[in-house]
Length: 211
Ligand SMILES: C[S@@+](CC[C@H](N)C(=O)[O-])C[C@H]1O[C@@H](n2cnc3c(N)ncnc32)[C@H](O)[C@@H]1O
Image (cartoon, rainbow, N blue to C red):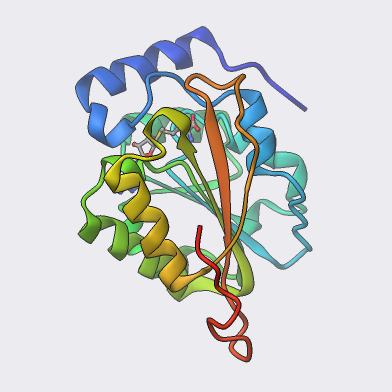
């Protein structure tokens, strides 16, 4: 069931952004429109896992709940200890770890017992150095099941900034770019949702056509 993002969460989000703008990457939690696009055509069978990177105040997490047949399918990886408190209070059945997305494959190995079909990221890749971007994408590719899907969003205003472009190039060098949504104007700021798949071994990188 959909629960509105509380004003308290928005205030906490904004405070965190003030304290650490580069790590938070947005002044406001994602809109419901963006959360739903992040979850579009998600088809999680029992026994398949989903990893959320940077769940923040839980704007996407709460939309994701109906897709889970068991809480054991979910792992959230969040850097901020303050957001972690909020997440644990809202979703006591789900597993959240305080950690860095650069260690995604290690944390998955430690905390998730099913193969990872989806990695959904809210990380501010456009604020990161190429080395950090690369480390995170490589870590994701190490734990994503063959044909598994990696999805993230980028803000339209920053879409052509060098670090945003560099992120897409790096990701497309490791995973196969699949799609970009239309611009989501009911998000603040407007954003695109981008999807890559992890090629099955027999396909290799032959089908990779860039982002
Ligand atoms: C734009 S906020 C997104 C919050 C929420 N998912 C939403 O959509 O409203 C980015 C989140 O990524 C987290 N974050 C940033 N760098 C991270 C990293 N290296 N590892 C894990 N989490 C990170 C931040 O603490 C923040 O919660």
